[in-house]
Image (cartoon, rainbow, N blue to C red; front, side):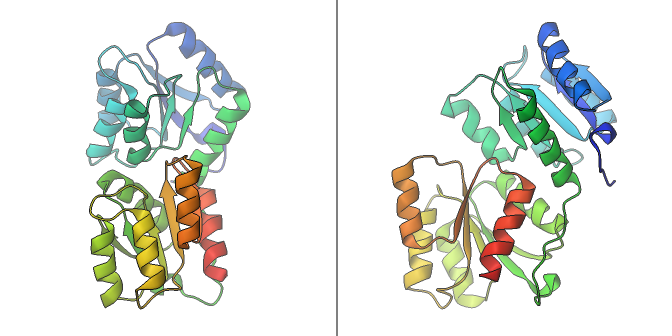
Length: 265
């Protein structure tokens, strides 16, 4: 289904606090979202998902029966709702809670309290995710464009793959780490490599270094998608020769712009 406006969105809001429900739903209404369902518990939300698929699931981090991270992972494991856009609203900053949900592929993580403009930006990111514009690759046919996706998280790969396929790309190969990626690069040509930073066997920085210095495709565009924020580590990745770095979570429009830019260059 194609969506062009916020009033077309069906939102499931999972929030145990009645006061917070009113605040968040009030913001949603002011921004034009008119279809809002509510749940206070994770299991209750999963039951609703089984019978009616929303366009966006918004959850608090701490629910009575599970965390927002647990809920996101349960949604991603299922077959029917695994690609439902997920937004987290939380004051939580601990890596233990946030990293799994970043890897699961979320539209946005908003702080609590958040500003209406932050919610508005996340809602439009949802529209872009549901109905993205196709990539513009100038003289290159999208059906011939080959992507190598390198990430040890199955859910993260599935999230990125879904976005690329929605943009019209069909030839996407997935591997779990840098060692497997180098084997593929030695056997096949790729137009773009998308890699995570932290992986077993060989991390993203080592992979970039090997590609740039010791592979038959030393000039292939490489996009790193990672939740890493340590500037010294990121500087090392840039020095290794990565084409661009994109934070998790990211907006669909951001990855589209980056891919078009680095491919055209």
